[in-house]
Image 1 (cartoon, one colour):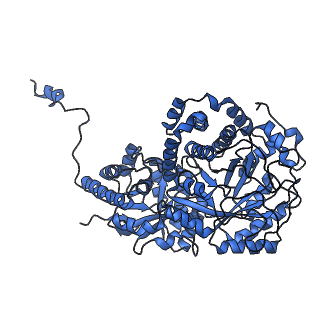
Image 2 (cartoon, helix red, strand yellow):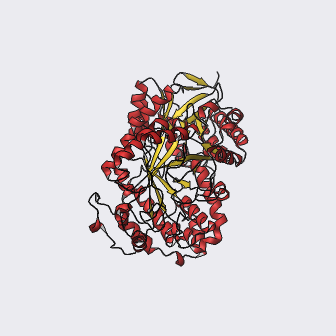
Length: 383
Length: 256
Protein backbone atom coordinates (compact mmCIF):
# COMPACT_ATOMS: atom_id res chain seq x y z
CA UNK A 1 0.00 0.00 0.00
CA UNK A 2 1.18 3.49 -0.65
CA UNK A 3 0.17 6.65 1.13
CA UNK A 4 -0.41 8.39 -2.13
CA UNK A 5 -2.62 5.76 -3.72
CA UNK A 6 -5.32 7.18 -5.94
CA UNK A 7 -7.27 5.95 -8.93
CA UNK A 8 -9.65 8.89 -9.17
CA UNK A 9 -8.33 9.59 -12.67
CA UNK A 10 -9.92 6.35 -13.90
CA UNK A 11 -13.47 7.15 -12.73
CA UNK A 12 -16.31 6.04 -14.98
CA UNK A 13 -18.66 8.71 -16.20
CA UNK A 14 -21.31 8.05 -13.55
CA UNK A 15 -18.82 8.23 -10.68
CA UNK A 16 -18.97 11.26 -8.47
CA UNK A 17 -15.81 12.24 -6.57
CA UNK A 18 -16.12 13.53 -3.01
CA UNK A 19 -13.56 15.39 -1.05
CA UNK A 20 -12.59 13.11 1.80
CA UNK A 21 -9.48 12.27 3.74
CA UNK A 22 -10.85 8.98 5.10
CA UNK A 23 -9.33 6.67 2.47
CA UNK A 24 -5.89 8.27 2.65
CA UNK A 25 -5.89 8.14 6.45
CA UNK A 26 -7.19 4.57 6.56
CA UNK A 27 -4.57 3.26 4.16
CA UNK A 28 -1.71 5.09 5.81
CA UNK A 29 -2.75 4.06 9.33
CA UNK A 30 -3.25 0.45 8.27
CA UNK A 31 0.10 0.28 6.51
CA UNK A 32 1.87 1.81 9.51
CA UNK A 33 0.70 -0.99 11.79
CA UNK A 34 2.40 -4.29 11.13
CA UNK A 35 0.60 -7.16 12.82
CA UNK A 36 3.82 -9.19 13.07
CA UNK A 37 5.45 -6.59 15.29
CA UNK A 38 3.02 -7.02 18.20
CA UNK A 39 3.94 -9.05 21.24
CA UNK A 40 1.84 -10.87 23.80
CA UNK A 41 2.45 -7.97 26.14
CA UNK A 42 0.93 -5.57 23.64
CA UNK A 43 -2.16 -7.78 23.56
CA UNK A 44 -2.37 -7.76 27.37
CA UNK A 45 -2.10 -3.98 27.41
CA UNK A 46 -4.84 -3.66 24.78
CA UNK A 47 -7.16 -5.98 26.69
CA UNK A 48 -6.54 -3.99 29.85
CA UNK A 49 -7.86 -0.79 28.31
CA UNK A 50 -11.39 0.54 28.52
CA UNK A 51 -11.26 2.04 25.06
CA UNK A 52 -8.94 0.79 22.38
CA UNK A 53 -7.09 2.78 19.75
CA UNK A 54 -6.09 1.62 16.28
CA UNK A 55 -2.81 0.25 17.61
CA UNK A 56 -4.59 -1.84 20.24
CA UNK A 57 -6.97 -3.11 17.60
CA UNK A 58 -4.02 -4.13 15.43
CA UNK A 59 -2.51 -6.03 18.34
CA UNK A 60 -5.76 -8.01 18.77
CA UNK A 61 -5.56 -9.01 15.12
CA UNK A 62 -1.93 -10.05 15.37
CA UNK A 63 -0.63 -13.64 15.49
CA UNK A 64 0.42 -12.89 19.08
CA UNK A 65 -3.24 -12.49 20.06
CA UNK A 66 -3.95 -16.02 18.85
CA UNK A 67 -2.98 -17.20 22.33
CA UNK A 68 -5.52 -14.87 23.93
CA UNK A 69 -8.62 -16.02 22.15
CA UNK A 70 -10.40 -17.06 25.33
CA UNK A 71 -9.65 -13.73 27.05
CA UNK A 72 -10.80 -11.92 23.95
CA UNK A 73 -14.00 -13.96 23.84
CA UNK A 74 -14.73 -13.15 27.50
CA UNK A 75 -14.17 -9.46 26.93
CA UNK A 76 -16.17 -9.49 23.69
CA UNK A 77 -19.12 -11.22 25.30
CA UNK A 78 -19.10 -8.70 28.11
CA UNK A 79 -19.13 -5.80 25.63
CA UNK A 80 -21.84 -7.39 23.52
CA UNK A 81 -24.03 -7.92 26.57
CA UNK A 82 -23.40 -4.39 27.74
CA UNK A 83 -24.54 -2.80 24.49
CA UNK A 84 -27.06 -5.31 23.16
CA UNK A 85 -28.12 -7.40 26.15
CA UNK A 86 -28.94 -10.90 24.94
CA UNK A 87 -30.72 -9.66 21.81
CA UNK A 88 -29.86 -11.07 18.41
CA UNK A 89 -31.49 -9.64 15.29
CA UNK A 90 -32.81 -11.94 12.57
CA UNK A 91 -33.10 -10.94 8.91
CA UNK A 92 -32.88 -12.45 5.48
CA UNK A 93 -31.20 -11.38 2.27
CA UNK A 94 -33.15 -11.29 -1.00
CA UNK A 95 -31.21 -11.31 -4.24
CA UNK A 96 -33.31 -9.59 -6.89
CA UNK A 97 -30.86 -9.72 -9.82
CA UNK A 98 -27.58 -11.44 -10.63
CA UNK A 99 -26.53 -9.53 -13.72
CA UNK A 100 -23.09 -8.11 -13.21
CA UNK A 101 -20.70 -5.84 -15.11
CA UNK A 102 -17.64 -6.76 -13.08
CA UNK A 103 -15.08 -9.50 -13.41
CA UNK A 104 -14.31 -10.36 -9.79
CA UNK A 105 -12.19 -13.49 -9.90
CA UNK A 106 -13.68 -14.92 -6.69
CA UNK A 107 -17.42 -14.44 -7.29
CA UNK A 108 -20.08 -16.59 -8.89
CA UNK A 109 -21.92 -13.57 -10.29
CA UNK A 110 -18.83 -12.42 -12.23
CA UNK A 111 -19.72 -11.26 -15.76
CA UNK A 112 -17.33 -13.87 -17.17
CA UNK A 113 -19.02 -16.75 -15.37
CA UNK A 114 -21.47 -18.79 -17.38
CA UNK A 115 -24.46 -19.00 -15.05
CA UNK A 116 -28.22 -18.58 -15.34
CA UNK A 117 -28.89 -14.85 -15.14
CA UNK A 118 -32.16 -13.39 -13.98
CA UNK A 119 -33.83 -10.32 -12.59
CA UNK A 120 -37.06 -10.44 -10.66
CA UNK A 121 -40.10 -8.60 -11.99
CA UNK A 122 -42.07 -6.36 -9.60
CA UNK A 123 -44.65 -9.17 -9.36
CA UNK A 124 -41.93 -11.70 -8.47
CA UNK A 125 -40.49 -9.31 -5.87
CA UNK A 126 -43.90 -8.79 -4.34
CA UNK A 127 -44.43 -12.55 -4.07
CA UNK A 128 -40.96 -13.21 -2.68
CA UNK A 129 -41.23 -10.47 -0.09
CA UNK A 130 -44.72 -11.36 0.92
CA UNK A 131 -43.58 -14.93 1.49
CA UNK A 132 -40.55 -13.82 3.51
CA UNK A 133 -42.71 -11.50 5.62
CA UNK A 134 -44.99 -14.48 6.23
CA UNK A 135 -42.15 -16.15 8.14
CA UNK A 136 -42.31 -13.30 10.64
CA UNK A 137 -39.22 -11.42 9.49
CA UNK A 138 -39.40 -7.63 9.75
CA UNK A 139 -35.95 -6.85 8.35
CA UNK A 140 -34.72 -7.48 4.83
CA UNK A 141 -31.47 -6.93 2.99
CA UNK A 142 -31.91 -6.38 -0.75
CA UNK A 143 -29.00 -7.50 -2.89
CA UNK A 144 -28.20 -7.39 -6.57
CA UNK A 145 -25.30 -8.20 -8.82
CA UNK A 146 -23.46 -5.04 -9.79
CA UNK A 147 -24.98 -3.92 -13.06
CA UNK A 148 -26.15 -0.33 -13.34
CA UNK A 149 -27.77 -1.25 -16.63
CA UNK A 150 -29.67 -4.41 -15.73
CA UNK A 151 -30.57 -3.42 -12.17
CA UNK A 152 -30.71 0.34 -12.50
CA UNK A 153 -31.50 2.79 -9.74
CA UNK A 154 -35.19 2.86 -10.66
CA UNK A 155 -35.29 -0.92 -10.30
CA UNK A 156 -33.62 -0.62 -6.87
CA UNK A 157 -36.21 2.00 -5.95
CA UNK A 158 -38.99 -0.40 -6.96
CA UNK A 159 -37.44 -3.14 -4.82
CA UNK A 160 -37.27 -0.80 -1.81
CA UNK A 161 -40.80 0.53 -2.25
CA UNK A 162 -42.21 -2.98 -2.39
CA UNK A 163 -40.11 -3.96 0.63
CA UNK A 164 -41.46 -0.97 2.56
CA UNK A 165 -44.93 -2.51 2.38
CA UNK A 166 -43.76 -5.68 4.11
CA UNK A 167 -40.79 -4.81 6.34
CA UNK A 168 -39.85 -2.31 9.04
CA UNK A 169 -36.16 -2.24 8.31
CA UNK A 170 -34.66 -2.25 4.81
CA UNK A 171 -31.00 -2.54 3.95
CA UNK A 172 -29.27 -2.46 0.60
CA UNK A 173 -26.23 -4.34 -0.57
CA UNK A 174 -25.89 -3.21 -4.16
CA UNK A 175 -23.31 -1.51 -6.35
CA UNK A 176 -21.86 1.82 -5.12
CA UNK A 177 -24.16 4.75 -5.77
CA UNK A 178 -23.91 8.53 -5.84
CA UNK A 179 -25.06 10.75 -2.99
CA UNK A 180 -28.23 11.69 -4.86
CA UNK A 181 -29.02 8.05 -5.62
CA UNK A 182 -28.62 7.11 -1.96
CA UNK A 183 -30.96 9.95 -1.03
CA UNK A 184 -33.49 8.69 -3.58
CA UNK A 185 -33.37 5.17 -2.14
CA UNK A 186 -33.63 6.50 1.39
CA UNK A 187 -36.74 8.37 0.35
CA UNK A 188 -38.07 5.10 -1.11
CA UNK A 189 -37.67 3.50 2.33
CA UNK A 190 -34.14 2.14 2.78
CA UNK A 191 -32.01 3.23 5.73
CA UNK A 192 -28.96 0.98 5.76
CA UNK A 193 -26.23 0.37 3.21
CA UNK A 194 -23.66 -2.40 3.09
CA UNK A 195 -20.65 -2.28 0.81
CA UNK A 196 -17.79 -4.73 1.11
CA UNK A 197 -14.44 -3.32 0.08
CA UNK A 198 -13.35 -6.97 -0.32
CA UNK A 199 -9.65 -6.17 0.09
CA UNK A 200 -8.04 -2.96 1.30
CA UNK A 201 -4.80 -3.67 -0.53
CA UNK A 202 -5.07 -1.57 -3.73
CA UNK A 203 -2.73 -3.76 -5.75
CA UNK A 204 -4.48 -6.98 -4.72
CA UNK A 205 -7.78 -5.21 -5.38
CA UNK A 206 -6.69 -4.34 -8.89
CA UNK A 207 -5.60 -7.92 -9.54
CA UNK A 208 -8.90 -9.52 -8.53
CA UNK A 209 -11.14 -6.86 -10.12
CA UNK A 210 -9.78 -6.81 -13.67
CA UNK A 211 -12.62 -4.87 -15.29
CA UNK A 212 -15.93 -3.12 -14.68
CA UNK A 213 -16.81 -0.20 -12.41
CA UNK A 214 -15.78 -2.21 -9.39
CA UNK A 215 -12.18 -2.01 -10.55
CA UNK A 216 -12.10 1.55 -9.19
CA UNK A 217 -10.93 1.07 -5.59
CA UNK A 218 -11.53 4.59 -4.33
CA UNK A 219 -15.08 4.95 -5.64
CA UNK A 220 -16.04 1.83 -3.78
CA UNK A 221 -14.15 2.94 -0.69
CA UNK A 222 -16.12 6.18 -0.44
CA UNK A 223 -19.51 4.44 -0.77
CA UNK A 224 -20.36 4.47 2.93
CA UNK A 225 -19.47 8.13 3.19
CA UNK A 226 -21.65 9.02 0.20
CA UNK A 227 -24.46 6.94 1.72
CA UNK A 228 -24.22 8.87 5.00
CA UNK A 229 -24.09 12.22 3.22
CA UNK A 230 -27.11 11.03 1.23
CA UNK A 231 -29.01 10.53 4.48
CA UNK A 232 -28.67 6.83 5.18
CA UNK A 233 -28.78 6.00 8.84
CA UNK A 234 -26.28 3.23 9.05
CA UNK A 235 -23.51 1.67 7.04
CA UNK A 236 -21.89 -1.73 7.12
CA UNK A 237 -18.34 -2.69 6.25
CA UNK A 238 -16.71 -5.92 5.24
CA UNK A 239 -13.42 -7.28 4.05
CA UNK A 240 -13.79 -10.56 2.20
CA UNK A 241 -11.45 -12.52 4.40
CA UNK A 242 -9.10 -14.78 2.51
CA UNK A 243 -8.79 -12.62 -0.57
CA UNK A 244 -5.58 -11.06 0.66
CA UNK A 245 -3.77 -10.97 4.02
CA UNK A 246 -6.81 -11.26 6.27
CA UNK A 247 -5.15 -9.54 9.24
CA UNK A 248 -4.28 -6.48 7.16
CA UNK A 249 -7.68 -6.39 5.51
CA UNK A 250 -9.54 -6.69 8.81
CA UNK A 251 -7.31 -3.98 10.29
CA UNK A 252 -8.00 -1.57 7.45
CA UNK A 253 -11.69 -2.40 7.51
CA UNK A 254 -11.90 -1.60 11.23
CA UNK A 255 -9.97 1.63 10.80
CA UNK A 256 -12.18 2.61 7.86
CA UNK A 257 -15.27 2.20 10.04
CA UNK A 258 -13.60 3.92 13.00
CA UNK A 259 -12.56 7.00 11.03
CA UNK A 260 -15.92 7.31 9.33
CA UNK A 261 -17.76 7.13 12.65
CA UNK A 262 -15.46 9.83 14.04
CA UNK A 263 -16.38 12.01 11.09
CA UNK A 264 -20.11 11.15 11.23
CA UNK A 265 -20.72 10.43 14.94
CA UNK A 266 -24.41 9.69 14.47
CA UNK A 267 -23.77 6.90 11.96
CA UNK A 268 -24.75 3.42 13.01
CA UNK A 269 -21.82 1.18 12.22
CA UNK A 270 -21.87 -2.48 11.50
CA UNK A 271 -19.39 -5.13 10.43
CA UNK A 272 -19.93 -8.19 8.32
CA UNK A 273 -17.63 -11.18 8.41
CA UNK A 274 -17.56 -12.65 4.92
CA UNK A 275 -15.08 -15.43 4.29
CA UNK A 276 -14.32 -16.70 0.78
CA UNK A 277 -16.57 -19.54 -0.33
CA UNK A 278 -16.53 -21.82 -3.37
CA UNK A 279 -18.95 -20.82 -6.14
CA UNK A 280 -20.44 -22.34 -9.33
CA UNK A 281 -17.67 -23.09 -11.84
CA UNK A 282 -14.97 -21.96 -9.53
CA UNK A 283 -13.12 -21.75 -6.28
CA UNK A 284 -10.78 -18.80 -6.08
CA UNK A 285 -7.66 -20.07 -4.47
CA UNK A 286 -6.57 -17.67 -1.80
CA UNK A 287 -5.19 -17.43 1.69
CA UNK A 288 -6.77 -19.87 4.09
CA UNK A 289 -8.70 -18.27 6.89
CA UNK A 290 -9.59 -20.79 9.58
CA UNK A 291 -12.60 -20.57 11.89
CA UNK A 292 -10.17 -19.61 14.63
CA UNK A 293 -8.88 -16.73 12.49
CA UNK A 294 -12.41 -15.63 11.68
CA UNK A 295 -13.34 -15.67 15.34
CA UNK A 296 -10.27 -13.61 16.21
CA UNK A 297 -11.32 -10.98 13.68
CA UNK A 298 -14.90 -10.94 14.97
CA UNK A 299 -13.77 -10.54 18.58
CA UNK A 300 -11.28 -7.83 17.65
CA UNK A 301 -14.00 -5.81 15.85
CA UNK A 302 -16.24 -6.14 18.89
CA UNK A 303 -13.61 -5.09 21.43
CA UNK A 304 -12.37 -2.21 19.24
CA UNK A 305 -15.83 -0.82 18.47
CA UNK A 306 -18.06 -2.32 21.17
CA UNK A 307 -21.14 -0.39 20.03
CA UNK A 308 -21.06 -1.67 16.45
CA UNK A 309 -23.43 -4.22 14.99
CA UNK A 310 -21.98 -7.46 13.67
CA UNK A 311 -23.57 -9.80 11.17
CA UNK A 312 -22.68 -13.44 10.73
CA UNK A 313 -23.22 -14.84 7.26
CA UNK A 314 -24.79 -18.13 6.21
CA UNK A 315 -21.43 -18.83 4.57
CA UNK A 316 -20.49 -20.19 7.99
CA UNK A 317 -21.56 -23.47 9.60
CA UNK A 318 -24.51 -23.72 12.01
CA UNK A 319 -22.12 -24.64 14.83
CA UNK A 320 -19.92 -21.60 14.28
CA UNK A 321 -22.87 -19.26 13.89
CA UNK A 322 -24.66 -20.56 16.96
CA UNK A 323 -21.56 -19.95 19.01
CA UNK A 324 -20.55 -16.55 17.71
CA UNK A 325 -23.94 -14.93 18.32
CA UNK A 326 -23.91 -13.59 21.81
CA UNK A 327 -20.10 -13.55 21.83
CA UNK A 328 -19.69 -10.82 19.24
CA UNK A 329 -22.28 -11.18 16.48
CA UNK A 330 -25.54 -9.34 16.99
CA UNK A 331 -27.36 -10.24 13.81
CA UNK A 332 -27.89 -13.50 11.99
CA UNK A 333 -29.47 -14.30 8.65
CA UNK A 334 -32.08 -17.04 8.40
CA UNK A 335 -33.98 -18.78 5.64
CA UNK A 336 -31.25 -17.77 3.23
CA UNK A 337 -31.31 -18.24 -0.53
CA UNK A 338 -28.44 -16.68 -2.46
CA UNK A 339 -29.94 -17.35 -5.87
CA UNK A 340 -32.40 -15.00 -7.55
CA UNK A 341 -35.68 -15.38 -5.73
CA UNK A 342 -36.23 -18.77 -4.17
CA UNK A 343 -38.45 -17.70 -1.27
CA UNK A 344 -41.77 -18.05 -3.07
CA UNK A 345 -41.11 -19.76 -6.36
CA UNK A 346 -38.33 -21.71 -8.01
CA UNK A 347 -35.05 -19.85 -8.09
CA UNK A 348 -34.81 -17.94 -11.35
CA UNK A 349 -31.06 -17.42 -11.39
CA UNK A 350 -27.99 -19.17 -10.00
CA UNK A 351 -26.33 -18.57 -6.65
CA UNK A 352 -23.55 -16.15 -5.76
CA UNK A 353 -21.76 -18.67 -3.54
CA UNK A 354 -22.37 -21.84 -1.53
CA UNK A 355 -24.01 -21.42 1.83
CA UNK A 356 -23.31 -23.59 4.85
CA UNK A 357 -26.31 -22.86 7.00
CA UNK A 358 -29.64 -23.44 5.24
CA UNK A 359 -31.75 -23.26 8.42
CA UNK A 360 -35.17 -21.64 8.34
CA UNK A 361 -36.27 -18.63 10.38
CA UNK A 362 -38.03 -20.98 12.76
CA UNK A 363 -34.92 -23.12 13.24
CA UNK A 364 -32.63 -20.14 13.81
CA UNK A 365 -35.08 -18.67 16.25
CA UNK A 366 -35.21 -21.94 18.19
CA UNK A 367 -31.41 -22.24 18.21
CA UNK A 368 -31.11 -18.73 19.68
CA UNK A 369 -33.72 -19.36 22.33
CA UNK A 370 -32.03 -22.61 23.34
CA UNK A 371 -28.83 -20.67 23.94
CA UNK A 372 -30.64 -18.22 26.21
CA UNK A 373 -30.58 -15.47 23.59
CA UNK A 374 -33.52 -13.30 22.65
CA UNK A 375 -34.43 -13.38 18.95
CA UNK A 376 -35.33 -9.87 17.81
CA UNK A 377 -37.41 -9.41 14.69
CA UNK A 378 -37.64 -5.66 14.90
CA UNK A 379 -35.35 -3.10 16.46
CA UNK A 380 -36.04 -0.16 14.25
CA UNK A 381 -38.51 2.63 13.90
CA UNK A 382 -38.40 4.76 10.77
CA UNK A 383 -38.84 8.45 11.60
CA UNK B 1 -47.37 10.30 55.35
CA UNK B 2 -46.86 7.74 52.64
CA UNK B 3 -43.56 8.17 50.81
CA UNK B 4 -44.69 8.10 47.22
CA UNK B 5 -42.87 8.94 44.02
CA UNK B 6 -44.94 11.50 42.15
CA UNK B 7 -44.39 12.07 38.46
CA UNK B 8 -46.77 14.25 36.48
CA UNK B 9 -49.75 13.57 38.70
CA UNK B 10 -49.13 9.83 38.94
CA UNK B 11 -48.09 8.17 42.17
CA UNK B 12 -45.82 5.18 42.60
CA UNK B 13 -44.70 3.19 45.60
CA UNK B 14 -41.61 1.80 43.90
CA UNK B 15 -38.61 3.99 43.10
CA UNK B 16 -36.96 1.38 40.93
CA UNK B 17 -37.42 1.90 37.19
CA UNK B 18 -36.25 -1.02 35.12
CA UNK B 19 -35.31 -1.40 31.46
CA UNK B 20 -36.88 -4.25 29.56
CA UNK B 21 -34.84 -4.65 26.41
CA UNK B 22 -31.68 -6.45 27.39
CA UNK B 23 -32.90 -9.81 28.61
CA UNK B 24 -35.25 -12.52 27.35
CA UNK B 25 -38.86 -11.45 26.92
CA UNK B 26 -40.19 -14.46 28.79
CA UNK B 27 -38.32 -13.29 31.90
CA UNK B 28 -39.81 -9.79 31.98
CA UNK B 29 -42.71 -10.62 34.25
CA UNK B 30 -40.62 -12.47 36.83
CA UNK B 31 -37.90 -9.81 36.87
CA UNK B 32 -40.35 -6.92 37.27
CA UNK B 33 -42.19 -8.76 40.00
CA UNK B 34 -39.03 -9.67 41.87
CA UNK B 35 -37.84 -6.09 41.79
CA UNK B 36 -41.18 -4.70 42.91
CA UNK B 37 -41.06 -2.58 39.77
CA UNK B 38 -44.00 -0.36 38.83
CA UNK B 39 -42.45 1.52 35.90
CA UNK B 40 -40.67 -0.25 33.05
CA UNK B 41 -38.93 1.50 30.20
CA UNK B 42 -39.39 0.20 26.72
CA UNK B 43 -37.75 1.11 23.43
CA UNK B 44 -40.47 1.93 20.93
CA UNK B 45 -38.12 0.62 18.23
CA UNK B 46 -38.41 -2.85 19.71
CA UNK B 47 -42.19 -2.90 19.32
CA UNK B 48 -43.29 -5.28 16.59
CA UNK B 49 -47.04 -4.85 16.80
CA UNK B 50 -48.80 -7.84 15.28
CA UNK B 51 -45.43 -9.52 14.67
CA UNK B 52 -43.05 -12.01 16.23
CA UNK B 53 -41.37 -11.47 19.62
CA UNK B 54 -43.23 -8.21 20.18
CA UNK B 55 -41.99 -6.78 23.46
CA UNK B 56 -45.37 -5.15 24.10
CA UNK B 57 -46.97 -8.60 24.37
CA UNK B 58 -44.68 -9.45 27.29
CA UNK B 59 -45.30 -6.47 29.56
CA UNK B 60 -47.31 -7.67 32.56
CA UNK B 61 -50.59 -5.97 33.37
CA UNK B 62 -50.51 -3.24 35.95
CA UNK B 63 -47.03 -2.06 35.01
CA UNK B 64 -46.72 1.56 33.91
CA UNK B 65 -44.85 1.82 30.63
CA UNK B 66 -42.23 4.45 30.12
CA UNK B 67 -41.52 4.26 26.39
CA UNK B 68 -38.26 5.83 25.27
CA UNK B 69 -37.32 7.51 22.02
CA UNK B 70 -34.19 5.43 21.46
CA UNK B 71 -33.02 5.85 17.87
CA UNK B 72 -33.92 9.55 17.74
CA UNK B 73 -31.09 11.82 16.64
CA UNK B 74 -32.93 15.11 16.98
CA UNK B 75 -36.05 16.65 18.50
CA UNK B 76 -38.24 16.01 15.45
CA UNK B 77 -37.44 12.30 15.43
CA UNK B 78 -38.03 12.05 19.18
CA UNK B 79 -41.42 13.71 18.79
CA UNK B 80 -42.42 11.32 16.02
CA UNK B 81 -41.37 8.29 18.08
CA UNK B 82 -43.29 9.61 21.09
CA UNK B 83 -46.42 10.03 19.01
CA UNK B 84 -45.96 6.50 17.71
CA UNK B 85 -45.67 5.23 21.29
CA UNK B 86 -48.96 6.87 22.10
CA UNK B 87 -50.54 5.29 19.02
CA UNK B 88 -49.27 1.90 20.15
CA UNK B 89 -51.15 2.35 23.40
CA UNK B 90 -48.09 2.89 25.59
CA UNK B 91 -49.71 5.75 27.51
CA UNK B 92 -48.62 9.35 27.92
CA UNK B 93 -45.35 9.01 29.76
CA UNK B 94 -42.31 9.42 27.54
CA UNK B 95 -38.61 9.27 28.24
CA UNK B 96 -36.84 11.48 25.74
CA UNK B 97 -33.61 9.94 24.56
CA UNK B 98 -31.85 11.88 21.81
CA UNK B 99 -28.47 10.56 20.86
CA UNK B 100 -26.41 11.53 17.90
CA UNK B 101 -23.23 9.78 18.83
CA UNK B 102 -23.30 6.06 18.21
CA UNK B 103 -19.98 5.52 20.02
CA UNK B 104 -20.62 6.93 23.48
CA UNK B 105 -24.40 7.15 23.38
CA UNK B 106 -24.35 10.48 25.21
CA UNK B 107 -27.52 12.56 25.09
CA UNK B 108 -27.88 15.88 23.28
CA UNK B 109 -29.23 18.36 25.82
CA UNK B 110 -30.07 21.09 23.27
CA UNK B 111 -32.31 18.88 21.15
CA UNK B 112 -33.75 17.34 24.30
CA UNK B 113 -34.90 20.74 25.56
CA UNK B 114 -36.68 21.36 22.24
CA UNK B 115 -38.38 17.95 22.30
CA UNK B 116 -39.38 18.44 25.94
CA UNK B 117 -41.28 21.61 25.07
CA UNK B 118 -43.09 20.08 22.10
CA UNK B 119 -44.07 16.89 23.90
CA UNK B 120 -45.13 18.64 27.09
CA UNK B 121 -47.38 20.83 24.94
CA UNK B 122 -48.75 17.64 23.38
CA UNK B 123 -49.82 16.52 26.82
CA UNK B 124 -47.11 13.97 27.51
CA UNK B 125 -45.57 13.40 30.91
CA UNK B 126 -42.04 14.12 29.77
CA UNK B 127 -38.95 12.64 31.39
CA UNK B 128 -35.82 13.74 29.57
CA UNK B 129 -32.61 11.70 29.71
CA UNK B 130 -29.78 14.23 29.90
CA UNK B 131 -26.22 15.14 30.73
CA UNK B 132 -26.33 16.52 34.28
CA UNK B 133 -26.03 20.21 33.54
CA UNK B 134 -27.94 22.62 35.76
CA UNK B 135 -28.68 25.17 33.10
CA UNK B 136 -30.04 22.54 30.69
CA UNK B 137 -32.05 20.90 33.47
CA UNK B 138 -33.65 24.25 34.34
CA UNK B 139 -34.54 24.76 30.69
CA UNK B 140 -36.12 21.30 30.59
CA UNK B 141 -38.07 22.09 33.73
CA UNK B 142 -39.24 25.38 32.19
CA UNK B 143 -40.17 23.50 29.02
CA UNK B 144 -42.54 21.30 30.97
CA UNK B 145 -40.55 18.23 32.05
CA UNK B 146 -42.13 16.18 34.82
CA UNK B 147 -38.84 14.69 35.99
CA UNK B 148 -35.21 14.97 35.01
CA UNK B 149 -33.13 11.89 34.21
CA UNK B 150 -29.41 12.69 34.37
CA UNK B 151 -26.87 10.02 33.56
CA UNK B 152 -24.64 8.65 36.30
CA UNK B 153 -22.09 7.34 33.80
CA UNK B 154 -22.12 6.34 30.13
CA UNK B 155 -24.93 3.93 29.25
CA UNK B 156 -24.07 0.33 29.95
CA UNK B 157 -20.75 1.18 31.61
CA UNK B 158 -21.81 0.02 35.08
CA UNK B 159 -19.41 2.65 36.44
CA UNK B 160 -21.82 4.12 38.94
CA UNK B 161 -22.22 7.73 39.95
CA UNK B 162 -19.34 9.33 38.09
CA UNK B 163 -21.41 12.52 37.89
CA UNK B 164 -22.42 12.46 41.54
CA UNK B 165 -21.55 16.06 42.38
CA UNK B 166 -23.49 17.38 39.41
CA UNK B 167 -26.49 15.21 40.12
CA UNK B 168 -26.47 16.47 43.71
CA UNK B 169 -26.63 20.02 42.37
CA UNK B 170 -29.72 19.09 40.35
CA UNK B 171 -31.27 17.46 43.39
CA UNK B 172 -30.62 20.59 45.45
CA UNK B 173 -31.73 23.13 42.87
CA UNK B 174 -34.69 21.61 41.04
CA UNK B 175 -38.18 21.09 42.31
CA UNK B 176 -38.69 18.12 40.00
CA UNK B 177 -37.88 14.52 40.79
CA UNK B 178 -34.33 13.70 39.72
CA UNK B 179 -33.98 10.12 38.55
CA UNK B 180 -30.53 8.72 37.89
CA UNK B 181 -30.48 6.99 34.57
CA UNK B 182 -27.59 5.10 32.98
CA UNK B 183 -24.34 3.90 34.40
CA UNK B 184 -25.62 2.39 37.64
CA UNK B 185 -23.87 -0.94 37.85
CA UNK B 186 -24.32 -2.16 41.41
CA UNK B 187 -27.04 -2.03 44.02
CA UNK B 188 -24.63 -0.11 46.26
CA UNK B 189 -24.42 2.64 43.62
CA UNK B 190 -28.20 2.78 43.35
CA UNK B 191 -28.32 3.09 47.13
CA UNK B 192 -25.83 5.95 47.01
CA UNK B 193 -27.94 7.79 44.43
CA UNK B 194 -30.97 7.50 46.67
CA UNK B 195 -29.00 8.62 49.73
CA UNK B 196 -28.10 11.91 48.04
CA UNK B 197 -31.75 12.59 47.38
CA UNK B 198 -32.53 11.21 43.95
CA UNK B 199 -36.20 10.37 43.61
CA UNK B 200 -35.67 7.08 41.83
CA UNK B 201 -33.11 5.00 39.98
CA UNK B 202 -33.37 3.61 36.50
CA UNK B 203 -31.25 0.55 35.74
CA UNK B 204 -30.99 -1.86 32.89
CA UNK B 205 -27.61 -3.34 31.95
CA UNK B 206 -26.63 -3.98 35.57
CA UNK B 207 -29.56 -6.31 35.99
CA UNK B 208 -29.57 -7.76 32.46
CA UNK B 209 -25.92 -8.79 32.65
CA UNK B 210 -26.17 -10.41 36.09
CA UNK B 211 -25.82 -14.17 36.44
CA UNK B 212 -29.19 -14.37 38.21
CA UNK B 213 -31.33 -11.62 36.75
CA UNK B 214 -34.40 -11.90 39.04
CA UNK B 215 -32.20 -12.02 42.13
CA UNK B 216 -30.27 -8.95 41.04
CA UNK B 217 -33.58 -7.15 40.49
CA UNK B 218 -34.44 -7.94 44.10
CA UNK B 219 -31.05 -6.69 45.29
CA UNK B 220 -31.65 -3.39 43.50
CA UNK B 221 -35.10 -3.04 44.99
CA UNK B 222 -33.73 -3.47 48.49
CA UNK B 223 -30.77 -1.15 47.90
CA UNK B 224 -33.02 1.58 46.52
CA UNK B 225 -35.33 1.25 49.51
CA UNK B 226 -32.37 1.39 51.89
CA UNK B 227 -31.00 4.48 50.18
CA UNK B 228 -34.38 6.19 50.31
CA UNK B 229 -34.74 5.44 54.00
CA UNK B 230 -31.26 6.77 54.64
CA UNK B 231 -32.11 9.98 52.80
CA UNK B 232 -35.37 10.42 54.70
CA UNK B 233 -33.64 9.77 58.00
CA UNK B 234 -31.23 12.66 57.31
CA UNK B 235 -27.80 11.07 57.50
CA UNK B 236 -25.20 12.56 59.78
CA UNK B 237 -22.26 14.39 58.35
CA UNK B 238 -19.27 12.32 57.34
CA UNK B 239 -16.01 13.88 58.34
CA UNK B 240 -13.63 13.92 55.47
CA UNK B 241 -10.32 14.40 57.24
CA UNK B 242 -10.04 12.39 60.39
CA UNK B 243 -11.43 14.30 63.37
CA UNK B 244 -12.18 17.92 63.95
CA UNK B 245 -10.28 20.05 66.40
CA UNK B 246 -12.39 21.22 69.35
CA UNK B 247 -12.72 24.78 68.12
CA UNK B 248 -9.18 26.01 68.70
CA UNK B 249 -9.77 28.67 66.05
CA UNK B 250 -12.38 30.48 68.11
CA UNK B 251 -10.65 30.18 71.45
CA UNK B 252 -9.66 33.79 71.18
CA UNK B 253 -13.25 34.81 71.88
CA UNK B 254 -12.86 33.62 75.43
CA UNK B 255 -9.59 35.38 75.92
CA UNK B 256 -9.60 38.56 77.88
